[in-house]
Length: 350
Image (cartoon, rainbow, N blue to C red; front, side):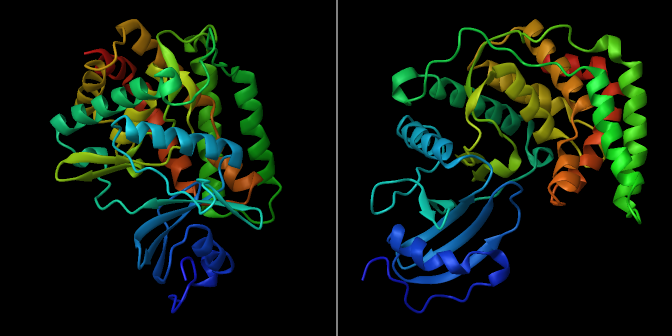
């Protein structure tokens, strides 16, 4: 019977899928499930590789966005695939819904896409340029109006610039929390050192922060998390972009800058400026961005990184330690960035 699990592979209860698997198989008419593997690489959502007699699929539990937003984004993705964007259209449930809701949890399903997810440092300069062009085409496709069923963008875009006093207050909140702990772990001690240093930087570079909350340059609907874990390569080319949960209106320059730093940031806290230049140049072959617009976006991103402690919110406020390593590496990268401000700006416009 379609959708009925028979001889299904055992699934560890530690990954949390066991109780929902039978219902999901019925919802997506998966047939016989022969193997299930939890994929630990994802940070925000939870993912599995599922083998069935209908094929191999990627299953995602939607955690990071409301299900109504997830449905909208998945429907948009289906339109983007029709328009030639390298991605996989979501599977539909037997009732024609891209999201299956099981006991309050939401799931979506995609055909499994074979390939690799190389870090930016593993790409050639030409591949970095090709990747920039892919992002440009995504921005074009997302902003085709009725073709993708997204609302029209607002007349203006604003991006709040954090006051240094607010950033210092947030740093002090975490420092106070750690000081009250019965025993601090090595991570806590490292956070104390980094936060005390961050407060010094915020005071020293206060005059360098952006002066208003209106970013320069074009804006519109964007992917939202264009980084190496969300790009699948095969045979030296991009065959799929995944994880479309964060589609929303942003500055195009902001997404280019953020993506470049995520893609080409090194493990030692540096940035591969040659590949950054190639990536941005590739994007600009598709979408026109001015040098002043790009410099403005780079400076805004730099200040945002100065003031942002989202990884610590995960750790201390949510009890989620999955992103601890990202706070420490981001802090090292910020120090490197401050030492190379002019070089970074130049890489984005050269």
